[in-house]
Length: 158
Image (cartoon, rainbow, N blue to C red; front, top):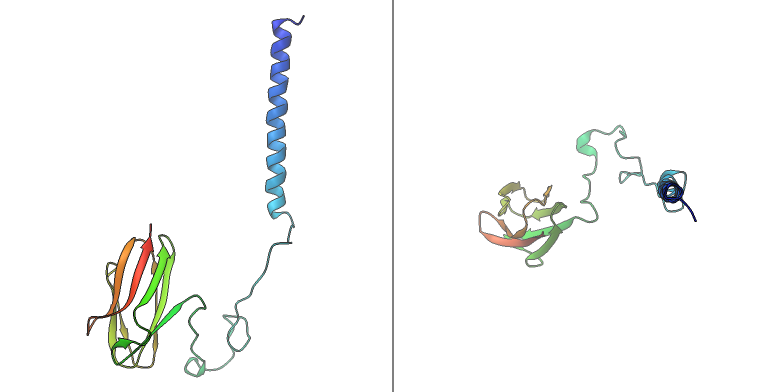
């Protein structure tokens, strides 16, 4: 039969072994995340439409360089004669996302994002980009301000 001191010593050793094993296992997992395991990692480099890395100058004056296209995940809303070509566009984001969309018009107008109170002028034939944080949740109207014509419905989920 063991003494109370012996039992306490065995219990303490068991705790030390368990805690040490825990730290050993979690330390190996964390080290494996960034320690050269590149099987799932990818590297991308932004490039211009001419194939040059983004940010590099190709020597042409700024007015001769092509305008950047909207980002691939950016929705483009086209209006003609003061109305959206494809009807009211549904835009949906989650709180904390960056809201991104662009508007192109054939007439001078102004776009107003209700709730966020963001307004931007539209020039004929030009694309106007919108980018702002989704920090208000709800459903908001996006309209051509002059004619009060709705062009999009913005939903921000909580």
